[in-house]
Image (cartoon, rainbow, N blue to C red):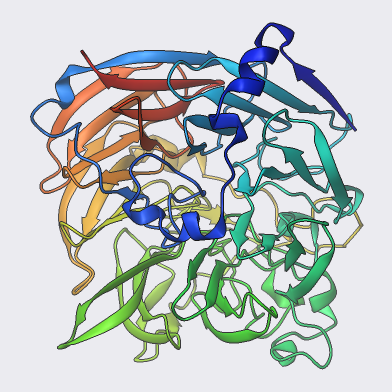
Length: 540
């Protein structure tokens, strides 16, 4: 299943180097909010804020950033992986199938683990992998052909692997796993192939499954009544992107993808729980504590694959534990994360599918917006008003930041009959398309970074750019916000007002989320562009 490459010339160095012998504890991940040296989990910390208390690079000197090192990957796929960094070592998935360990100061490769994928892979949206998890002395990755693997963090050698899904039926593992206590949390992609989604917990030492929560409930499970015609068997409900965790409440939060088939809701009447929802689970048992559904009986592929952002602040006169969520359906939500109570919902981008939200946050669907034989123009497009890329929240500015697709093409959806065949696409529609005459009449949309006030949902400022973006965001305590674009730009803006402060051209599409960390006393900022990894620091 894999090839292992170890660099003999570095053998003595690796065995002697303390960084590669360091172990990562659950307690160190818990305390990562105040640790500028490391980025030990997908979002930087359990809160999903993609924020760091670090200020060596600030608004006054960010223009002095210079390239420190580049790691050139062997994959031709655009990276969507977010690296993790622990004690001077960076672990990152290269393309869809390899893991590399790098010196976080120099970019030197310590080892590479190569996983050979089958010639045919059933995956809807490109051959990608979004990252790894680290606990103890093991690195964990999921593979597109369905394996959960544990690698020795010192050498990259395989310690154990478990095949947990069957890619021949459309299941794939693309997300970065999440460590919670002694468990590895992961779930499959594949909603476009008619899978039945779930979220799993595995014992970090042995790889044995501890629990499974079915995101598409079967007979006897709560929520099963929201499915008709046995549609639950092929109901979708992917777990595309890594979730968040509140250790005080001991609650695990995860976004769930679209129902299947995507654009033909007639074959799946009902709300279709728990698709297009956030679920709150007990991480010890996998039991559901609460859920909130953003788009019941989704007709437009507005799956809730965003990172749940957890923030504590005063809200409506009292201190509350909040969840902030910029959804693909173009609405920004504020929930009480203790019980899922809806507090606020407001559009942050153009949308035509809903007349608004009721007092419990349920959308009031606009008439005439369903897919039809003639085609229906709907905003936002199938890409969504935002998507899987990481938002950010700054406790300093108290602003929520997200990458948005602004007035980007509303698509004409066509609903058609559909037949499920295992391993084949199960979309329920002709390809969503734009009428040629409409293309001539309208300009394509643009990309923007929008700063939202969580107390009101209002936009404080916007940074616009030509084209659109699939880059996540990084916020720092020096009031900087880093991001990138499809055109290959990597840039820093002022987190208080959106002013552009620095920009460079990397030559490849930026489709991951930047990170920052301290190494050798200097702050580093790392981002992927195309099939390479770039790290910057201040001129010395």
